[in-house]
Amino acid sequence: MARKYFGTDGVRGRVGEYPITPDFALALGYAAGRVLAGHSGLVHERPAVLIGKDTRVSGYLLEAALESGFAAAGVDVCLVGPLPTPAVAYLTRALRLQAGVVISASHNPYDDNGIKFFSAEGLKLPDDVEAKIEAEMGKPLCCVSSAALGRARRIEDARGRYIEFCKSTFPAALHLRGLKLVVDCAHGAAYHVAPDVLHELGAEVIGIGCEPNGLNINDGVGATHPETLARAVREHGADLGLALDGDGDRLIMADGEGTLYDGDQLLYVMARARIRRGQAVAGVVGTLMSNRALEDALQALRIPFERAEVGDRYVLEKLLAKGWCLGGENSGHLLCLDKHSAGDGVIAALQILAALRERKTGTPADLLGELRLYPQILLNVPIDKAFDWQGHPGIRSAAMETERALRGKGRVLLRASGTEAKLRVMVEGEDMDFTREQAEKLANSVRQAAGERARNP
Image (cartoon, rainbow, N blue to C red):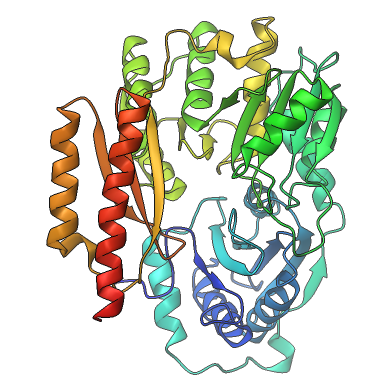
């Protein structure tokens, strides 16, 4: 069944514009509650869900509407307030609940928001379950009897539970004493989690992006603005810097000189560290966006590598199908399934820090070996969601021309964003200037085609 509302990461859009409206959230909560009640497996107890959110001001509105919808369906609700997306996945599993709900638009601006679900196992909901929820939304919204209404309660120690869980993934024999770390939380959900985790493990922590006001999430800070992290590391004379995104599931790092390390590099560090420990790495999953140099470097270590569609849910699906543990995206979504069921920026950072401590080095560059990323230029072109860019002859011709110009020594990838009305234009090659030139040329062709479409719908 095709999905109408759910994208690659739940339902997402501009607040106040359908579907990110109070009435939709109410209907979604009710529909999800109906589906979950039918799959709860409980005989004498009603199902319960956990709702967490990031720091956007619209979280209050959507939380209240979702809570009402679940209650009307006879589902109890546990509220935890602002917490990272992976914290909701963990707590859903730890508290033996039927589902977890996250109200967040991740790396998007504050006036966007979204709603995504986790299963009882702390995994992203399968496509077929999301389709069932959408099908339920086509039915009238009713209400169970007063005696059967769901109730709400707040989990007061949710933050502390998650902090301890994160710390448990760091080797007990290691510590972070003597390290000075800049931690950029993007004014998002990890603002009162990530600094405490690292401080309690011994690090001196300088927090930036830790003062959310409901409107400043991802605003010039966090994993989508790593230049802020690089500058702060240099200014404070820190050893390392960590940048998360608004919901805490992405990680970008910087060394003491401000050199940045993306998800591909960090994923390689984690895989190589396991090999050095004598641990087996059955394989690694990346995406269509993963740098070719990562694939080459892993093959040199005799580690199989496979690509999934872009989106951490698809990386997770392939990892589960293969029975592998490590995967991720160059944007910084990193999964270590032997540590957590979801991508987690804090836990990924702890894996990198553990590798650095084990090798007694202070920079990720020392752990990268021969890995040298190929220049990869990614440009975003706004398009109408109804635009058939795949069938446009001008775009097809421009992409083929770019591939010919690369002469088999690079890659071209066009894909629609799953969360925004944009077309991602990626060109990868051996020479930075030539690669950028080709990417801009291709992006201009897409802009021209999109403009013609807008003028002649």
